[in-house]
Amino acid sequence: MCVCVLLQFVGAGDDPQSCRFSQMMEQRLEKVFAEAQAKVLNVNSRLSVQMVSVSQATGSPAVSLVYTLKNGTVLLNGTTASNLLGQLSAELVGYFLFYPPLIIAERKLPFAFRITSVSQG
Image 1 (cartoon, rainbow, N blue to C red):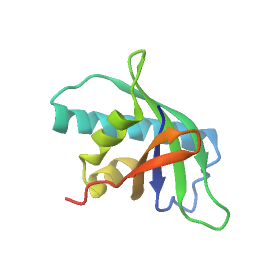
Image 2: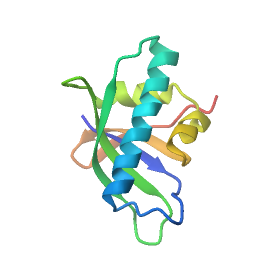
Image 3: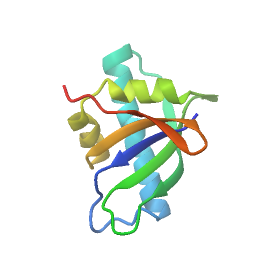
């Protein structure tokens, strides 16, 4: 039920381990999903994002965001969420997140993800 977005890098002044960063990324992801719904599904329901984890490997500029997506009280599955984001270009997703995405993946097992690259079109 979780989705992962791997960002290529974050700003030098940002601390991916801070609550502020997690909250900021939740808000930005909500904007990305609002854009995706409007463009792909022609609907404007209020989707909410809850960050599950934010991690960054030592020495790596890449940051992994694992989150859940809800429509009201209904938790959306990872396939729906990753497919929705996959309909947007990498540039558009990056515009809303303020950081370029590397991959979007759907969580299939506790520690395994099915990779869904963002659209390059």
